[in-house]
Image (tube, helix red, strand yellow):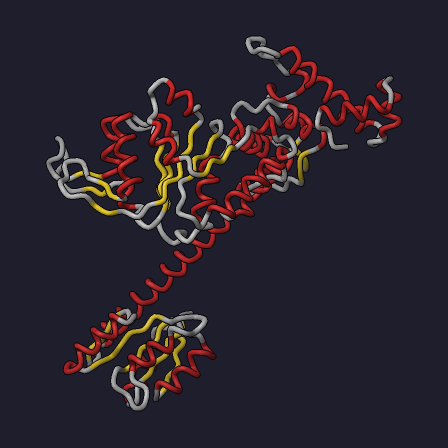
Amino acid sequence: MAVILIVDDEPLQRDILKTILSDEGYESYSAASGEEALKLARTYEPDVVLSDLKMGKMDGIELLEKLKGLKQVPTVLIMTAFGTIDSAVDAMKKGAFDYLTKPLDKEVVLLAIRRALERKELMQRNLELRKALNDMFSIQGIIGHSKPIKDIIYIIRKVADSPATVLILGESGTGKELIAKAIHYNSGRREKAFMAINCAAIPETLLESELFGYEPGAFTGATQRKKGLFEAANGGTIFLDEVGDLPMMTQSKILRVLQEREIMRVGGREPIKVDVRIVSATNKDLLHEMKHSHFREDLYYRLNVIEINLPPLKEREEDIPILADHFLDKYRKEMKRNIKGIDSEAMRALIGYEWKGEVRELENIIERAVIFCKDEFITLKDLPQSIKPNNFVTDFSKPGSLEDSVRKFEKELILRALESNGYNKEKTAEILQVGLSTLYRKLKELGIKA
């Protein structure tokens, strides 16, 4: 039930409003002065304050200013006589939501209150969404305990509040946009927009108009002015994903943005100043692209003030169980499934798998497993055939595949032996018929933490 506080030094006006609001089901309180209203506001935390403009010691505008300092700031409606409408407009400039002229009309009052409550609810939802975004893309939201992930978190903490451009390098699916968002939402720009564009997914003919906008008549079909992503992200961050696929002409225009801090709409004649931080990402070797004149050297060094290398999952196996548990928690909540975890055999299969689709593939596999799981724990039977150790396939087209296969088999064999012997290394060495020092060496070589 919404709480309304009525503030008016006329007793009859207070009584009439209180009756109207009570009949509509609102919880209402009334005060004869601004001082009394402040005390009631601290006690009852009203959603809306309906205040007269002209009162004794504290008028409506002074009350409005003091209400802004409360823990729960209410939406304020000002009541005024016709002769003081200019003052009411001034109150709106200082934060009042609307004003009502006396004598009051019942339907107008109720409509204004409904609109004020809708606005308050919208603002509350906006705050909740912002908090959810900040939580989702906080540094704590970056999942992993491996050294590469700890190094990335350290870099984000250092660079988030600087204006420096950041270039994120990594394979598709490793989570480059997550890192970009973490940089944005941990910076002073977090209240402004984060705009992302995949430079490889948009045709060259459309890319510039998406980035810089266009003026009416710039091309066939351009009937009205459109702002581009740089204008939409003004004050915030723009994320150029797959920046290595930018056409050379567009590269020169991005360089101009970095140098001059201004853009020109397609078909425009006047430059437009923008304050945008650029974070870019690619899975291409830009140094190689530069050598073959596919990427501008001057743009590369402008984009690469800070470089973040996001390694593939095969280089941070210790993060796989943490990521798998994170995705399990996400999808069991979404699907309302009572799944307690992933059993050891299934987890070993996940750790031993070569994740060509990186983190995105791991998330998809866990989502699929949650759908198929019929027990309390995800087991091997809930995973796709390609992940199961007995069905592991080696790609012989790659150099060193035999060595990789032997290493993978060796690791699986030692893990199984350790588990079977309760992680007792002496017993495991005896079962495998190797010396204890050899086992310890193998554990170190294969990155097994037993």
